[in-house]
Length: 117
Image 1 (cartoon, rainbow, N blue to C red):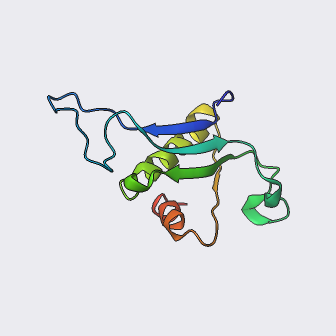
Image 2: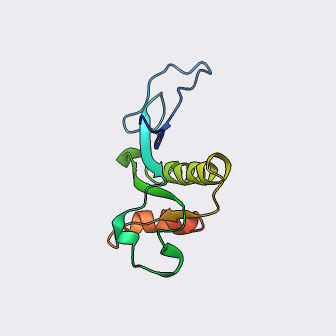
């Protein structure tokens, strides 16, 4: 967090006259619903992969993206990946964004593909 590399997705309470009561498992009401590490540090595992994964190229890398179970499928991870693109282009001036996930994580693979990576 000190390096400004941990991004947290937080829902904001609705102040439109709602009673403030949240249904159990809802994604509303000033709570953390997801996070991702968005950094320029590239793991050693990227070395030797070849092609567009050359570690010599500076890139923004998304690591450890997670969403609260009761908020999955509601676009939280997509928003975190959108933020990664903002960090890459606007804050770091980079054109290269890298994302990886475990081969046994089809949910995150789907998010990555939906995000255009």
